[in-house]
Amino acid sequence: MHIPDFMFPVTQGLVYWVIALIFILLALRWARHSMGEEKVPLVAVLAAGIFAIQALNIPIPWGTSGHMVGAALAAIVLGSPFAGVFILTLVLLVQGFIFGDGGIVAMGANIINMGVVGGFVGYYGYTGIRKLTANSFAAAFIAGWAALFISAILCAVELAIAGTFPLVPGLTFMGTYHAVIGLIEGGITAVALYLIASARPDILEHPTGVSS
Image (cartoon, rainbow, N blue to C red; front, side, top):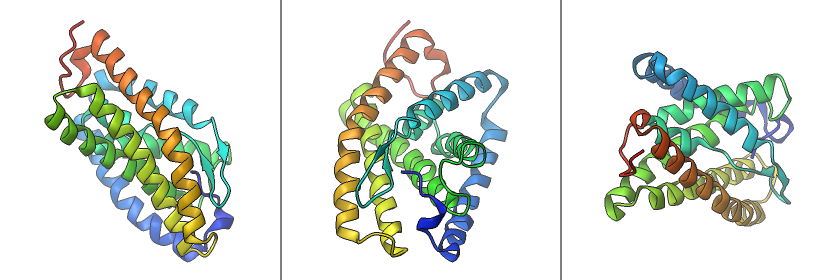
């Protein structure tokens, strides 16, 4: 899902950067007010895990690549969509500047797609579904799947606006591949939440009903 620079005109990339910077500033404010010293190790572990799962890339026809994202898990565990924005921004900066994975001009779009959309869909999808089902882990699975799928759809739309790929083939391939990959993402989100809830329920912002 990482968009390289050659797929975007610079002007379009700059527009996405402006939007992304607004959310990055809000995420930094969240980190300053909500991320105490006790959460720093958890943020580091989540960032490292997200970096690792994103390394598994599948090339997609009429798209960029298919992979898991992890923003939903970060947002759910840390109790804020801005946690997803914060951690994904850190991960994408390292990937882009050090490893050349994803463009610099296109990084604003990548942050929006994976951090903003992933974080907000993941967090509010989780909290909304949990209220309806009273099952934290089913809610985490669905939210993880939806966060990835919707991020991929937005990526396809952005590439169509850029004139890089036709809209319908882009939506078809990006949507189909990520609908399947999303099952893995949803499973990892639910399992990781269960493991954290079993071992350290005190660090979760929302109780899951699992006792250690």
